[in-house]
Structures are given as structure tokens and as C-alpha cells.
Length: 224
Image 1 (tube, rainbow, N blue to C red):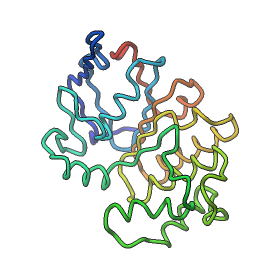
Image 2: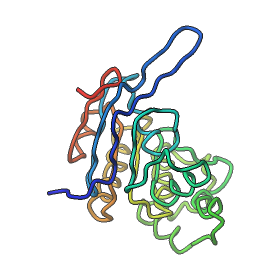
Image 3: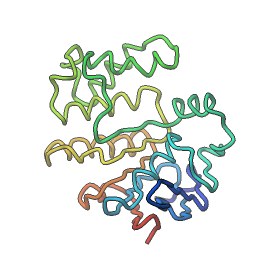
């Protein structure tokens, strides 16, 4: 497949952390281009900067130097409020620890994106997404009673509530067994191939990375 439109364009991205014990370079001036419709796997050992890169791409971390353009928008040009709106509209994120509110139901967790955006809850869409990830029958169940694989499938459904063009997944199978890991990766593959969602996956697992159409390798904050 030939990709033409650049959807993520990062140039000389550098992140440095200063603390009493010294100065640490997390990302060392890396550049990358990701095209619309790609499924890119970012691999590397623990501490290589993978999660830091994903947080920057998702607009969660703005404490970096260099230029990052998402869908043609330079993120450093947005103030906090505009960045929040941009992120909610265009970017979905999936985390290893699910980031669900454990004390409320599956359906209510999917209502949160609409609530934060001050929009009316779309229960038809919620039911469709829960059916897509195989969690419709547990829509009224409290999230604290779900297994890890079930929680991750709910998190994926929630990430699609605002129909993002970009889906960022940070070690989404890291806490799952092999059977549930495959289910989660098949959902990401489906989103990429059938919903034309651009997917960026961070993983240290070679098998999970093989679902991507391209791989990038990070080591000590630089691409190999």
C-alpha cells in the first residue's frame, strides 16, 4: 500500500528532564513522519523513550523542543484549552493500565468523552462500539468486576467514541495474557484496515509489533 498524506510530522523532537541528580535526555532530537492509514509499531527496550514519544504525539506532554505537526497543526501553537479540544477531536489513546473509572459501569465509562466535551451521550454509538469489541453483554457491569482483557476492550471502545483519525496505543497488551493480547491486536488491526484509522503502537513485544505495517526502533532516545 502506498501512503501519500503525512498525518504526523515530527522534527528534531527533544525532551530533557532535569532533577537534583543530573540532566537526563529522554528523546534526543528525533524526527519521524507517519502517513494517513499507516499502522506503525514503535519498539525498544524499557527506558528507551517510547512512552514519552507517545505522550508527545498525543498532546499530553508539551515540555519538549522541536516541531510537531499533527494533521497540519503545530501543537506548540495551541494554548491549553485549544490543545485539549484538538486532542479530543482527533486523537484516541489506549493505555496499558486501561485508565477506566473502576467504580462506574462499562457504559458510563464510554459516556465520559461526551460528558467532557459537553455533548449529549450517544447511547446508540456506545452500544455499537461495545458490540464491536464483544462487551455489549456487560455494558451495565461495574468495571471493577472485569478481567484485564475485558477492561482493555472497553478502553478501546472508549477511544473510538469521538471517531479519532489517530489512535495511539501504549503497551496495550502489556498486562494481558496471550489470548487476550491477540484479541486486542485484532481490534487495532480492524480499526486500521476497516475504519482507516492511523495507528501508532508502542510495544516491546515482537509478536505484537508484527501487526504493524512499519516498525521504528528506539534506543536511548534515538531511532536506530
